[in-house]
Image (cartoon, rainbow over all chains, first blue to last red; front, side):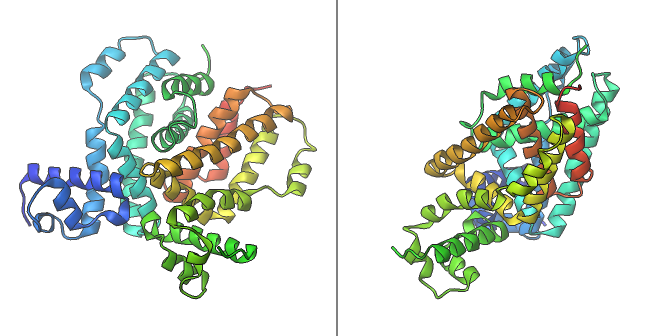
Length: 189
Length: 189
């Protein structure tokens, strides 16, 4: 199989745009080639099949959503209080807004996973690693709350992101909602 | 257009199953006819076009998810505390688990709405009415918390349902999570 890493990454990025723009059923080698602006047949040289593409999308989206270490280091100079948790979640919101297609592609993958057991296993593993890392980070940095605090924040942020990216007029501005959910979920003091 | 109400409802139910099983792009008149077990061409006698079908799905899902008035009346004999809110949300969870296809179809509609402004407007209106009704109900029944409590509960339940229906192995059992999020979001006492 062809191995140019930059080309492979560009093809997965094209797959993300196809998923977000046309849905999971729109994802074909041909659609990826067209979106990436490469000759027909290129994607088939890089991936064994369509499932192989789907399995690599989640990792690539998380790569794009990785926080900027300098931004995080700057935020972490503040006291370990609710305001700091809100600032970290506002940074996450900004990153997802800047890579909207990536989050929409993850939602398409979730729905496709209801129909494909192997994809479900793979996606569960990737998102579980992310959640475990978030819990370890929150507790390790001495942020307020316990494991359940992080799980409830995760569920509320998941709901907020689903609303904001799919039906943006339904709720208040997401930045205000982030502050509200942190104030309601994290114990005072 | 054909007007047999039972036949129309059966066609929309078939559309819900097609959306959940095959995704938004799988929704065609032909797929609806096949799923409903009716002669080819039937759906085209009941709906102006594919968008017309999509616009009627959300209302039908909410019809299926309507709580049983006797169950709710029984629950409402209890004191207005956190335990009652948890019991009401556990009832919602049971209803959605019993109509899993309906909730998955709503998720497909949300993603399709990112590509179809008219569907987005329609779906925003339907879900906004539901949320406003939930807020009015919570406050009117004297359940603990204020408007923001209901919004944060709504976001966390939305995240929980997305996780549970698409990647059920990712988190703890949803019934336990409902209790956790109520305990964390609703003020004690």
